[in-house]
Structures are given as C-alpha cells and as structure tokens.
Image 1 (cartoon, rainbow, N blue to C red):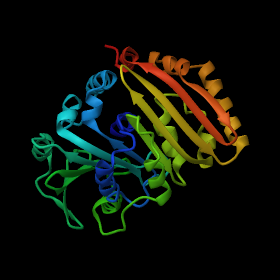
Image 2: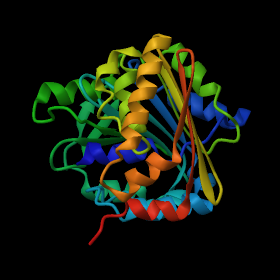
Image 3: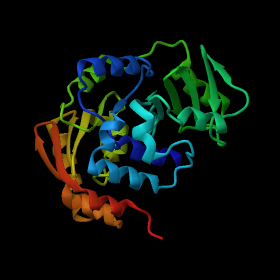
Length: 309
C-alpha cells in the first residue's frame, strides 16, 4: 500500500530547471542520494501550490489513504521549499525511495515526525535514524536544521539485513551521488516545466513502468523491461496540466513494438474512469528509437482518481 502510494508521489510536482541559486541547492541535495539512484524528482512546493491544477491535485492526494500522518498535502506549500526524491535499489519492482526535504521556517513536519518516531534511534553513519512506521518501512533523520531525509523501503523490511542495507545507502559512508548521465538529464529539464521525472540507469525500465502507470496502461509492457535506456517526463501546470514525455529504447524496432503495445492497450482501457480518460488524452508517436507521449489533463479530471464511496 505505502509503495503504491509512492507512485503518486513520483508523478507529483517537480520543478523544471531551477535558477542558478536554486540549482546550487538542488545539486547539494542530489549529492546526498545513493549512487545507484535510477530516477530523480525535484519538487518546488510553493510554486506548485499557486497553480490551480496543483491546488486541486493536492486536494485529491489528501483524500487518498496513505498511512502517513505527518504528511499533510494541503500544507506542503507552507512546510517545504524544495524536495529531491530518489528511486534507488531497484530489483524486480519499484525499489526504495529517499525523500530529501528542505524545510521552510516554521514547518510542522519535524514536530509531527518526532511525535510518531520510535524512542531509540538507529545509528547509521553520523545520522540518528528513527523508525516512523509500525511495519518498519519508513525511517527519517534530520541532516541539518532545515533538511530532513525520509527513506521508504519497499523490500522485505522484516529482514534486518534489508533494512540495514537500505539505510546505509542513504545515511552510511558509502559514496553518494547518482550517475553523471542522470545528472545531465536533470539539468536539461525545460525551464517552464512544473513537474519532471528523469531516469538513466540499467533498471530505468522498472522506474518507467512505475512512473508512467498513471498515464498509460503498463501491464503489457513488462517484456520490454530490459530495453529502456533513459526517459524523462515533464508537466507544465496552470489551470490544466500539459504532459510531455520521452522514452528512449535500445533500438527502433523495440520502440515500434512498444508504441503498438501502448496503442493496443488504449483500445481496451482499464475499468476505472481515470484510466479511460488518460487513454483518450495521451497521444504517442515514434522517432526511430525514441517514443514521445503528449496529452492535456484538466483539473476536473483529477476527481476521477478519487475513491468512490
């Protein structure tokens, strides 16, 4: 449940290429991510919260069950200045997630985390790490006065070795910072984008299937998992969301097969109203080994993602 929820977070707000001063802050947070990070999201909540589409998106997210009492989507614009989210340790599915939050003055998040944290911290590197979920899948640590890290482990968290490995990747002495190719993709984001996800990694296919699942049906794309080279997804927000994505496959023939598989799935959209709307809204084209996807989403369409009583 909690890792399914993170799929929504990965298609939640990201800011495009920041101004030089902001870029220095983004780079500092990116440097803290594990070295096997497969996908990166950068989030500017105050900017998002001013967008009519963004406001409605936060309201929709707030209505979803999350088991995260410390996370109030409607207040994120007041609590968080900047977030960098990394998807790492990908094996068969989604992997783990690291949320690095640069907090605003007066943020209530640290207080809420302290209220639900375990009594005894776990010493990992120089950090005092606390469990904040009864199933042992969520941990947090304060890195400095205004920065916290929250780690979401999606593997076998009942195994002590799995938890140790995941926390060491974020808080331990192991070399940090993602691949240079991934950093390059991040710097190439359109400055007008409000949302973006970038990935360049041997396991990018797992990340792509996860990130694109809200927009196109991906269950018939599993056979192409080992053939995704890199991808990016960007969204420009106003009173609507303009979605643009590009996926680079290992060969033109593979891209052609994937485009056909997506079109076939659009002919038989899922049962949910949201899936049907997205199948209609998203258009896919191909240029050799690269696939482009474009579409427009109105704020009112977000209501289709709400659970029905």
